[in-house]
Length: 90
Length: 225
Image (cartoon, rainbow over all chains, first blue to last red; front, top):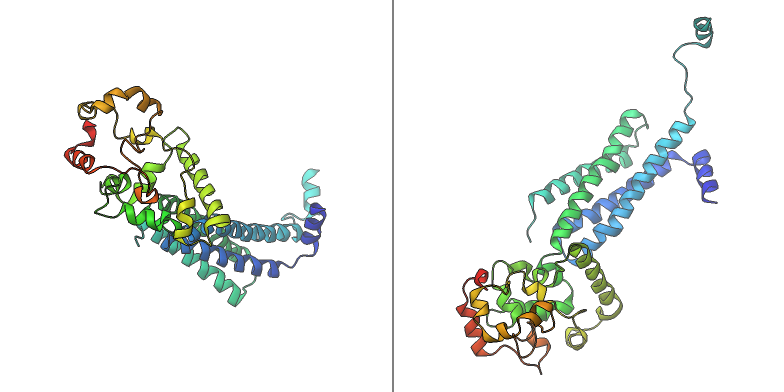
């Protein structure tokens, strides 16, 4: 089920939308982690070390997924033309 | 509020990462290799640096009184510990600069092999009780219900008061109870001995006497105890 959803996402997912989500999540995660640097009560410290880091990790995962999708969709052109390679093999 | 140089480094890296992300959101440049390189800084390297330093600073912050006192249910305990006129064990020890701002942690931490982790797990238990039970109570309502999770270990007292010093052994009660004290069968912080650490929380119980207060003042060097 999850594998199928992931494959669907890789095939049809919009990279730019995913990057926007990644950036927004990244900003939220950074804000939560920075809050605890200046206010060291239990709420900011625990929020930074749990929610903030989960959101930050999620944003990185989304970015890596975009890179993966990019690689999947990329068409790699060989640097040596096939006919030349063939003659080399001979 | 004390902000360490490491925190400033973490905050600086968070700011740079945020600037990168905002720049991407506003300008939406074409996603080529160089943009990906910059984004991996903004979404990976710099936030990870912030998180690592944040963890170090966050864990260090959990050792300070300000952290323990950030739950309103601990207000009276902190007030008592910092009361210059209080003769409770918590206050006497908090006046010692070896405890000072970290007196809650130094006395209540677990000193065993896995003590650091166990102390943090215990702290999570406090958070659970706070969120499920004490959060909506005022201090007067919560105070009678607050109790230590496990009996206070003499081992914690013995981190400084080793039970081998001549001053300590000069007290007849200490000599008589030596094995019991080392085994934890008689608590140092109990009525009849040194009294409770936070005597205000047990108004009907015995607290340290004036005579004991004088004897505490006479001991100048903890190493000798």
